Amino acid sequence: MAGLVSAKFKAEKQEEKDFSRLALDCNEIKIVLHIEMPSIRSKLYPSSSDLANLLKDKFKLSEFTKNFANCYAEPIFTNISHINNPQLRNVPWSVSTGTEQKLSSEQQRLIHNPMTTIYNTLTRQKEPFAPIDPENVRMYVCGMTVYDYCHLGHARVMVVFDMIARWLRECGYPLTYVRNITDIDDKIIARAAENGETIGELTARFIQAMHEDADALGVLRPDIEPKATENIPQMIAMIETLIQNGKAYPAANGDVYYAVREFSAYGQLSGKSLDDLRAGERVEVDGFKRDPLDFVLWKAAKAGEPAWESPWGNGRPGWHIECSAMSENLFGDTFDIHGGGADLQFPHHENEIAQSVGATGHTCGHHHAQTHHGQSIASHVKYWLHNGFIRVDGEKMSKSLGNFFTIREVLKQYDPEVVRFFILRAHYRSPLNYSDAHLDDAKGALTRLYTTLKNTPAAEFDLSENANGYTRRFYAAMNDDFGTVEAVAVLFELAGEVNKTNDAQLAGCLKALGGIIGLLQRDPIEFLQGGAASDGLSNEEIEDLIARRKQARADKNWAESDRIRDLLNEHKIILEDNAGGTTWRRG
Image (cartoon, rainbow, N blue to C red; front, side):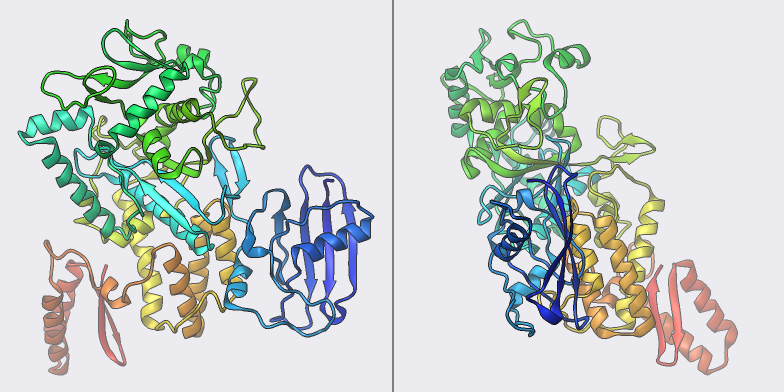
């Protein structure tokens, strides 16, 4: 059965159900509810079974899916085929009386949350989010290789997946978020030798620096941060399994390689066949490999480098096997979301799929995309998410190009929340162009929001108890592949209404919605008057100058008053004179 159903429910006489039309011209069943209510604040909550039975009775269907999402008094579109959220199964609906039922806080919260859709890099389309186990949602993100300070590209990964984790939890999913730390790598070995320090000293220092940068950006710590060096036995065990399964082979030089031609789905994430990859990719020439595309799982020990015992001699793991082993150790053979930067899509994530599926043989069902060059899609992860690059003058920001900026360098000039806002006001999959002008614009925009909250202090606002057009549009935007561009636009519309009405409840709504994505939670004065003073005036100096200007005005010493204002303007201090006195903010 496939079709588009338009259903009308009249609250005045709830036993009447008027189905207006049925169109059999779409591939998946969707339902559109047009609900007419006696009061604009009234709501109806039909259950899944109610809707399914009504459809079955009306259209004489022998069977009809009962998996509908919640409904409320505005039209919604819900993809029925993939709903798997037990929270929505017991939403009350009375068909026998004309009175509205009292709703719990949890049921009120569900008003906001039709199905979340996610763009899946693997299937190259948006899909409804249906976790493998709704009571145990699992997300793994590739973290940093800790040999230097984090740059803005790292900041984007941290902020984007922090936003995604926050949103999934806002939707009620019990999420376990893992972001690994690569603490053994060629670059780490080389940097430690260059600095004359141990690898442990180097990595500990930069792990601490990474946490400091993430904390500054308002990034919540992942639930688990496994280190590669703490999971060597799991990596060795997975490599042994791959050899037993005919997917890997030890070479004469002591290395162990993955045989990519033994995994028929290789290339599915990048969308290329093995022949395409061989023709189009630069691959290392290595006489010990059976195929130039084969990649290393275990590296034989070299003099002066750290090494671990293994069945193939002393050595250390290759980069790709680390994430496969750590994610399997923590999450099992399959899990819901794997994320990272777009640069990891190939070869790192492609190789992860080959390793994990090659070792366990277990995959998630991907019903939307059944073939890859004639082969079935095979991945141990249900949804692959990749954030876009940060670009400088049209080029990807990278250390190899010498055009990268560390988070610490940027935070000397800009408030950390400005940087977070700069990242979030672009869609996570889009390229993000970095420049001082773009950060200045982000600073001005965030200042406008905080100025609204300064002028109209926010009242307490419980999103689980209150729904309005702003909250619904914000939630709808976030449910559409984490659409922060549209969600931020809602914040500015709401701020405009607060500026017109001075409504403290709406100001509270603005602060609460911003808080969902980690914004607008500071005292407005603290934000507006904050900022580095290393090359300018301190807050105390500014307050002293304002007091001296006030006295000059009282003495009618206009020349001195103007001189002080000009001095403050030179330091980008903006004064606002009003009946209550003079307030200020940094420009």
